[in-house]
Length: 80
Image (cartoon, rainbow, N blue to C red; front, side, top):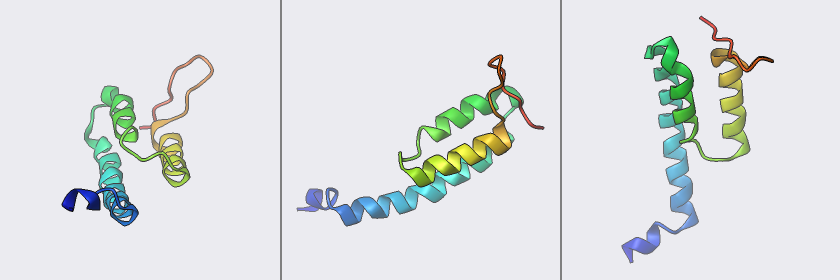
């Protein structure tokens, strides 16, 4: 009976509501990494976000604003 609760839509929505603030805090913690580890850390944190439009927009904004965009030669411009 308890196992069936995990499969309910309401329970899954509650889990998503709890994981978003935790994942956003993980983005904030990236500031404590060395410059060489920021991109790798961002990729690891981004992989933990659910695949929906709101999360994708947040990750795109964060990457564009704080990580930098890939440039023509494949280098990343890291903002300091």
